[in-house]
Image (cartoon, rainbow, N blue to C red; front, side):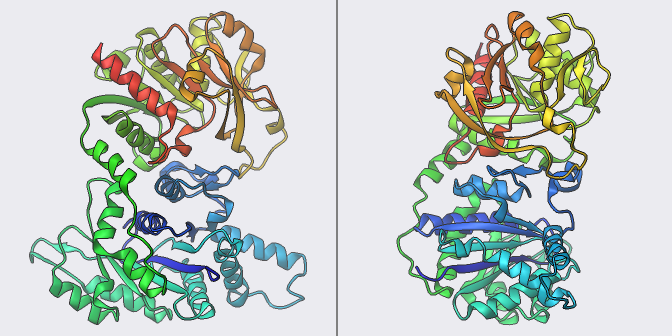
Amino acid sequence: MDQTKYIFVTGGVTSSLGKGIIAASLAKLLQARGYRTTIQKFDPYINVDPGTLNPYEHGECYVTDDGAETDLDLGHYERFLNVPTSQANNVTTGRVYLSVIEKERRGEFLGKTVQVVPHITNEIKERMQLLGNSGNYDIVITEIGGTVGDIESLPYIESVRQLVWDLGESNSIVVHLTLVPYLAAAGELKTKPTQHSVKTLMESGIKADILVCRTEHELSDELRQKMASFCNVTRDSVIQSIDASTIYEVPNLMQEEGLDVVALKKLELPLKNTPDLKNWNVFLHRLKNPKHVVNIGLIGKYVELQDSYKSILEAFIHAGAANETKVNVVSVHSEYIDTHNVAEKFKDLDGVLVAPGFGERGIEGKIEAVRYAREHDIPFFGICLGMQMAVIEYSRNVLGLKDSNSTEMNEGTANPVIDLMEEQKTITDKGGTMRLGAWKCDIKDNTLARRIYGSAQIQERHRHRYEYNGEYAESLEKAGLRSSGTNPDTGLVEIVELPEHPFFIGVQYHPEYKSTVANPHPLFVSFVEATVKAKQK
């Protein structure tokens, strides 16, 4: 294929309709037909990246191999396609403006007045075509964040309008995701919001080629016909997206609706073969027909918002299916755990995961959770801050260093078993300055980590400023907390475990970022397996 084709996904009526899932599902179907496909997300907020955003604001911050802090939708793209994303797959308005302003400061615009059109839109168009121009992809799907009609989305919509014109006939299409609400009082579905949304898009100069309609009820043929005629699309371009029990059903639902077929027709591409979803459906079958059920406590401090731990929740779905086990994730707010109530809170749990996070709020609850899991032989898994809490807990309660802490929580602690990384000490800016992206880790022989990974060296993604203080490693090792994985270049401890415990492991990195449907992460698979065994005992 000489010419890369482009699909733009926009959203109307309301946010949170699932543009990312529709984009990922369409990409999955095109990939399953043999097309090299990737997805990118353009976000209209002015933050340069979501790295400085509170999880309550925007859900989790996802991290790629090349160290980009990105929108959580990139996690969906990777989980569906099993292909790593990069810095180029996520662009924010902040990044666009920063780049244009830097060019202006360097004098690259030769003294011209810098304006939204053409300078901002040219920057956006350039970035929209970056992956397509790499020669690695046949089809690039671009998800435009926000809702059509938002002030902040206008430069993106204008850029899409220009790009559709630049690319010429049949080289790009626009998929518009919209809502068809059900009015219970009238007992009917309403198409008017969709009509208004498409009209708003047309006022910006963009014609929707395909409508994907989110709905709680089946769309009748009559309704589809009505939307087709009122929104200027062909009848086969009105696609129903009905609520599903799991996001992983959506590719099958989109295939039944013929979304991939109509997209390829409009792009004038051959249908090639039928999508091969065999392995995907094996996963779905296992997900829907579990043989076991376990309750795993997710101990965190942002548990009110599910999206704060999106990748962890999805990794449990993948690992659950691999074990033919339904994993009930029980959210436990660490701020409300103490020595008096921990036994009550944990009485129905088969395993405990202490989640990542920042700052001192809820820290003592996390430490108490680790202690209880360790002393009561409950399978334990600590991620990033969760691993650090395991080191502090062991230092306090086994090594006897009662005032052990992290300098993140107490700068003056006499025993900083967790300390700021050396290269972080001179950094003042918060954004994009942590230890980020994929780093190597050497795993020792005859350890739980080695058994889980089946490999002597791995690469995992990081996002942290504080680390296990190596000065305490020897005494902790002698006391029984084994350092089973270290970074070959820095010597930093990456993995700790307790050989005497049924399952106790803490990792400094974020394994959840690499778990996909096709490759569930081995740490999560082993952890779920351990909880099943613990429950059976």
